[in-house]
Length: 367
Image 1 (spheres, one colour):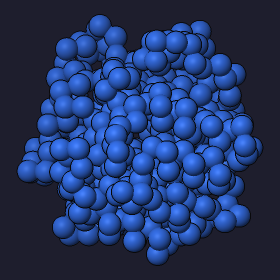
Image 2 (cartoon, rainbow, N blue to C red):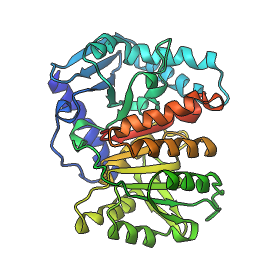
Image 3 (cartoon, rainbow, N blue to C red):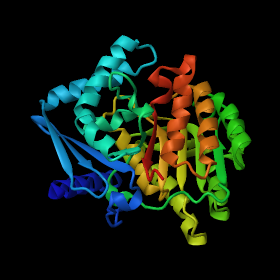
Image 4 (cartoon, rainbow, N blue to C red):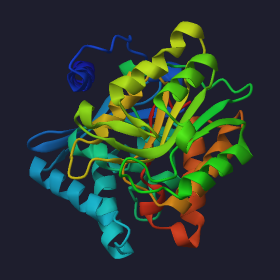
């Protein structure tokens, strides 16, 4: 089984290398136990005639669970769940399919997770599963979000095993709220920026001050641990179509990576977290989440927080305020800060629907 795992890891890395059309991943593999003794890694693998789930628990041999189910049926269930997450869907449409996916991926491992007192689940997702929010899986009583902190990783070989350094978190917030280059205005960005500033010290580049040159200058000159980008953008399975909007142009995934990596020459402090707000995955692109993973890896940031779909303005501002409030607490991991912010929305009557909270995903190091 360890061989199978190495093959999966190699395929994940080959997919990302192919995404950039160059070899860019050279990190050595890391044992999950060394990173977090309360985390488990779940690898669901879609095969032609079955779904295999490999479970990696701290200090234990790998386990695996098999469900005999044709690939077409898995793809069909995934599509149904994606459709059920639209803003207008009803609870009776959503929960049955969220339970089906839970039964396939998590239910077989449930007893083992409880016996090992697991608090965080890291998923290495295969194929179309990459576009599904694991937090919205449902066991018949509760969402997975209500039981665990959840992160995604493109592969354990891509993890840097250090927790977030919290002395005083410095944040660079860059955003576009006004209409520019034919893109619609994002009125929620201004309230999002002021909410973040009220929770944590932040340097802000907004509208005309958010240019490619200005962000490069700020990143090079200051040791920000968090870079927060509140602007139009898109994640795609094609690197050229993965970009964020600045006031004066666009930065594609390679340019953004180069800007973020310029910092490495001037300061040893890594960018701990790169946050994309208001970006979305390319419509109709089944592998669009690859773009999010690609940005996560290319940027050199230890973790990336992005959204699987275009989320509502007001709920995003509320979410981000709670996320940074949690992140400022030295005892809280990034994955748990994300979970608490999502739970806050879930508990608000107007935002109970997963459309508002499930789209936020953390890729990379969850500590």
